[in-house]
Image (cartoon, rainbow over all chains, first blue to last red; front, side, top):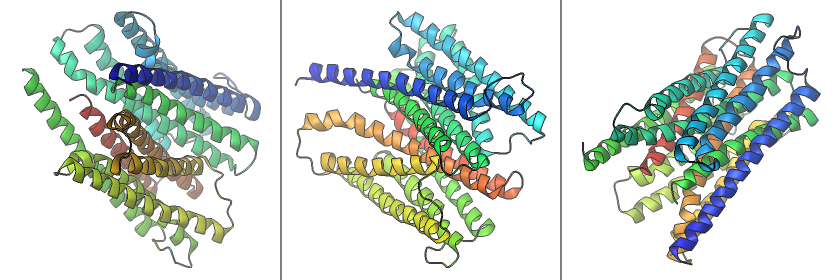
Length: 224
Length: 224
């Protein structure tokens, strides 16, 4: 097999990982919805039931923030268009995920207010808030540097590795935040057996596999 | 600034990240030791106190498994020797981390036996055990392919991206396992304020920053 053949094979494998990433993301979202709608109280930001308000938080942080930002990261590989269009889609999907993330964070603070629970004491909240603040910075720097670039081409070229690697680091931080959040909720609920626990664990695994496959699909592109 | 200058600058920055990785790892280990020795029961695999046995688990999984395997990943950048020597150091450090990980896992099963607690029900245990099994496979494949290679040079070349990306994915899985483990323990202990909680949260942050900086120091090398 010559070098060209092996490159084609490698690219085909890398594109399969992108398909796997979409699938794991959708699978995680479905499992989470089944959990929140069937086993828990449902999802409603304006409910009188505080737990329905709380449930907006995992829903929007996973489906709105993590899934969309992961898809935004892969837009350069998945959108069949010019580089300029793909860059715009990348920026726009990440903007939507940022906005939905803000609503998701609002939901958990509203829940804490209603229940008189202290804010920002857990490792989950530290990792989650740290990730979100850095994500906003990453989006702003990306917007200024790459969407309306005033600096030189060499400035953009030297900033690109940090933007790419920073984005991937943020995805992993978001995955860590999701896993610690699920872990915290399961331990609060005192679940140590049964279907609900299995459902939450499989949701956690699907989120992890989504993060790994998004990262792998981008990392492997560096080797082609 | 010409291309050579910017590459030198870039490599200097990347090497600073390697120093940061060592520091975060050592910092996490110190914080964990302070927690286990000062706030908790101490560390002893043959104790009559079940909690002293349990404490061997976080100690060996973090200092033995995560810290050493992260250092093993960076050995290609940090060991000032020939490529063959660095490859051997990389393999050997990962072998030690694997052995210490086995003792760390033994500790938690021994604790569960003593306390009549079910094994392998939590998301933490699923992620942790999944990571550890895949780590053993990764080590074995790496050993067969790269230490005593019987295949062609092209087989090794095409396996390398998967070995590198797989290793980085495993590091992140291990970090997720550590964070969910700390989160589970904190919630079990019912900690929602105070110095012990702060100590555990900072340990979790240091572990996360260790993982991110190890990954970044390797990822950035791809751009040089």
